[in-house]
Image 1: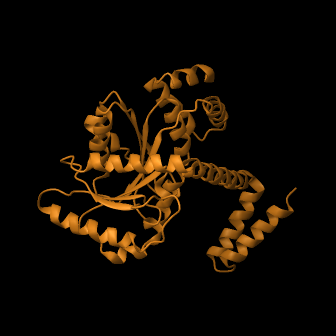
Image 2: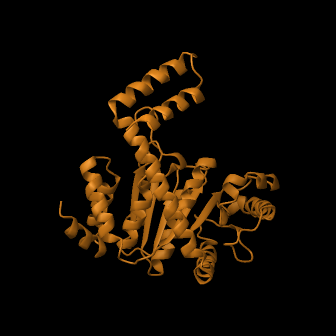
Image 3: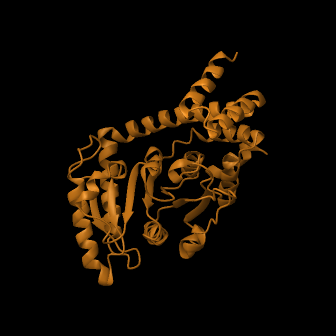
Length: 327
């Protein structure tokens, strides 16, 4: 594979080259990882920065419909939009449906949009391990906005905040009250809460739900990276397109303020450091599982734990002691 040629085609905005580069990045083969690192290094100097939007929400809240309506609105303004939809993988077979692109029928045909479904595999947070590298590829390809859709909502899904500039939480009407403010894990990282399906008979309910969440946000401690009025809750209708432009204007306001005050670069610097440490941790785990001797010892300790002869914490301590003693 000619990495120089692939990098040149990616920076030229060729969609097929970008798709091929993402496939290379997502591969776990050792030879592909070596090429992927070369490609990432080659593209790191482009200087392009897209607005990275993380999006999470419970199943059925309308994430795909929202992304399609929102993405089409952005492309009408002349922006290029990339959508990275992370699909849950089966714990048994390891397979994924990868049907997000099918749901976004009109956006998938939009020449200024690029949609890439990816399996979550075993990753916590509903974010594929290589998603952050794929985001960098999309930036190098000249996209203005990168949307990262996660699997669901919960404590583990907060990982998406470590690779996005603005985190959006999509909620359904009648989904909460002010007690939701105690769910700090997900609420504290949300920059904007969007109550979807604010249309028809659900519109009054959506308005009340939005007010409940706005009240819940006031219970949280103010973050230094937020201007006055943020984080905030708003109502939107992905079906009718209502509230999407207003939400986009608020996102731009927040992004501009963070750039002017230095929070933008500081946030990205913290994220880079986080993913460096995460790569080291995952690399150590890979080396552990790659050693036949260590795998055998892990299996033996695991059997003792399963039979109740050894506590999990004691087994882990013994395993780590073996690693410390290894040359």
